[in-house]
Image 1 (tube, rainbow, N blue to C red):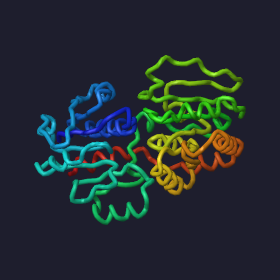
Image 2: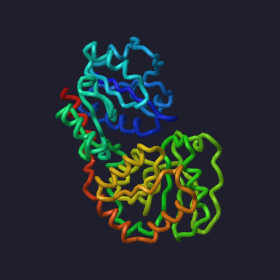
Image 3: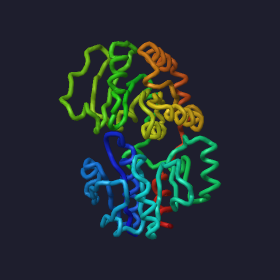
Length: 330
């Protein structure tokens, strides 16, 4: 089967879409599928190497692209793209798979994949009633990268005293990491404080700064999943990171950017039996609120241990293979 995946990376798209699409592409290729990518962001070319990536400009109306003619099936994982393109493709007989598009209907696409467990219950019920078994939702379909699932969680007693890791996604367009850094750079909690900037962020493109001084502060470093795995506590934005922390059984405090983030993060708290905790919007908090909340969780080791225990077994690492299997069966 020839499969075309339409996704983007960086800027308003962040890193999560590209990460899970790369994991899906590898799972599809392992079963004999030929996978190519179509993108409007040049950064995807390097990120997906050596897989073939074509760059194109998407206009307001559908237009022919050679890869669209080449493929048997197209997968779309991009919240900002023009859906008219893909309705046009489906009308030409190309099966269409949508990822993480809550607004689509069963007559729009052949399959809807929701690699998450944080959608509102009424939305899940509506989509299940409409799509039936063509709607993949829940823990069993969370698409984690092999880099994550190849590493088992570290026993919590080995890391419960630190470090505290702050992160804000691959792009961090709103400067959330800088805000968290300014709020916490002078607090003394007896733990290493580690500020991880994303590979697509502005900070990654500028000259690295000197790490802050202080007895317990480690400083700013490029993001690595190893820090999530070894952390006693992660503080970061909503997105893929909470799911990676659930795999690592690392307690995470989630900070929102939007109203939708607040609802989704709270739903994830419920679904995970409070293995993650939503604390507030980055815009509605001030330094006092943020540091008081952080210090409270840090001093409450029992709560962090319960969060660690609650995350055990939620994810088995096989979600991306299940998604690939279902797509190949179309």
